[in-house]
Image (cartoon, rainbow, N blue to C red; front, side):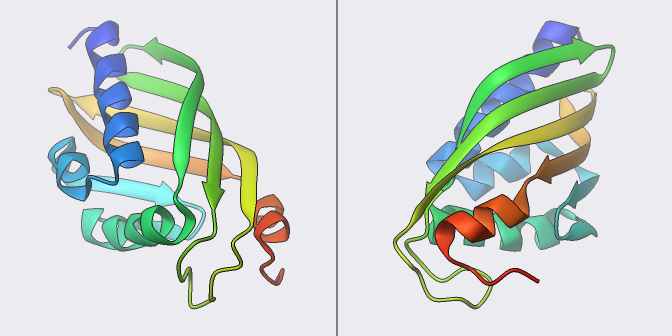
Length: 134
């Protein structure tokens, strides 16, 4: 796949995430994909559970600020915004909004995401939405 094709897969990932479409997200990942994030690593089943909480609990929305691609790798810097409107990680909603910078690194093969690493400032998010730290 070309670098531009790989970037389009990542754009499709962001669009599906922002719509809260977990089925569309699943379709973008290889069956054996590894997904690494702030809460650890796992398969799509583990990630989907966490993503559901982010989508339903925090109304998460990603805005692509920068994207670069080289060979089978794509890196993205986002502005992530959301509002704590539903239960998240066992905590009741506070109604508070947040904004932070997040980054993800993707490895793709044959038009599918095989690995995804994500990093975000979870402490800043917790402070902004009123969650206890630590």
